[in-house]
Length: 331
Ligand code: UDP
Image (cartoon, rainbow, N blue to C red; front, top):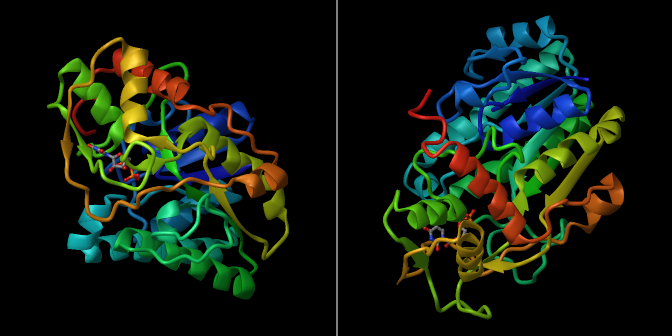
């Protein structure tokens, strides 16, 4: 299948491009490089640096490359910033996605795979999370993702769009060969910050909150390897053959891991201490978020290859050792 990977220079998109190639598909990358890295794009893959608002250009690419399916990874994803600057999030995550979808409908491309998030659930009453549970986001980031999920349902009904929306838990790790990995600027994620604290590249890690109602008082999250996430995107292709089909899947291992357990894993894998201090809770952090991914397992035959935190951290560490400065300065 000829697949346009929007955001293919970003963290999850760049890993998915490699999985697509491995599975025999033909990816094409579109990325405006605001957060993406040119170096993360596979060298054999056609690359276009275009904004989604430029519908005539995006339409041309869809036709020229004979695109059959679009995967959409491009989004802003800083929860705190979405609270202080929601306009930026609504324009980039909602408006830009609508431009893309309008182009697709205009060009007759009717298969779509969308990166959604467990942040659409808000603060859930029950855990683990199952797809049918209520979605009540507590920040504009989660709301923008839910808005697109809802738009997609209407488009499936009205235009015969078939789509899958994957609700990611905590994407983590890096390609096994160490060639690409996580490189956000600014970095806000736990595993890269813990690794950088261990190597002395950044100040000691702050553990946000030690009084949560969890076994060790720190937040529980479901860390899922970025290659496992990517594989689910490809496993859903067959299901999208039916016009108007719509699917929602949680993607997580189902293993809750605390912040202190992540620190332990980083110490074990690196052989270094992670200097850290205890800080107040970070605004907007739910105490626990972990997935029931039975639906993806049953319907897609998806089985994460990384079920525990240490092997995931090991891939992040390999990437860090091979590229201590990430992809270098923004490019
Ligand atoms: N966290 C932390 N210190 C940091 C960054 C993150 O204690 O410097 C905690 C955060 O409160 C959350 C978990 O680590 O409980 C994962 O946070 P991250 O930002 O990686 O992902 P999120 O769960 O927010 O998507």
